[in-house]
Length: 226
Image 1 (cartoon, helix red, strand yellow):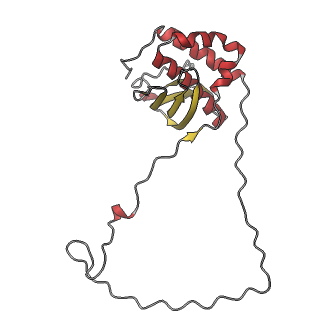
Image 2: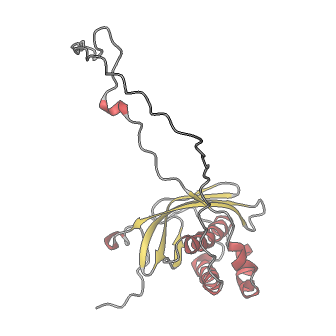
Image 3: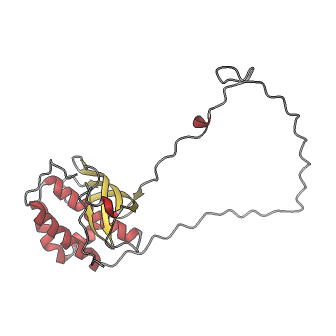
């Protein structure tokens, strides 16, 4: 569902042109090398002399007959036993990936992005924030997984974005890579002047079925028909 409260001074053509320019610059820049996993810390232990054998384990105490529980589920003379639903804590969602380095600056600082830098201040405040965060999202996705080639990101594809004074929360975003749309969510903080991204974290999800693209107003790629 398309949002209704957007402030876009130049409309979709300007935003789309800016998106295309930034995307071209992203692909011209070299991919950052994948982050190496830090070496695991290990402790060397030196044994001196013979190691005494441990004493044999003591026999287990005889099992006590179980007492029937009372009507409230508490065994007689015992403590409450957690029900199966209470035995395990609820599963938490996967953690977001925090960006160690802001990558959109590389594209916007390139001399070839002069036109994009001129267009950004002409966009409405919310659209300008989203465009900066979407550029950062594509750059982070390419650095995170070199098999991905994101060429379009829509922050409000599956749910409306939440705009702060200098932040964008997109829990219902989507990105396109190799003519396939994927689930995306991100948190994006910007500087107070809204000129650049200051912090970013994201989570990429599963592919969105093609029969759901129209429901989310996702553009169909120019894939040739068989």
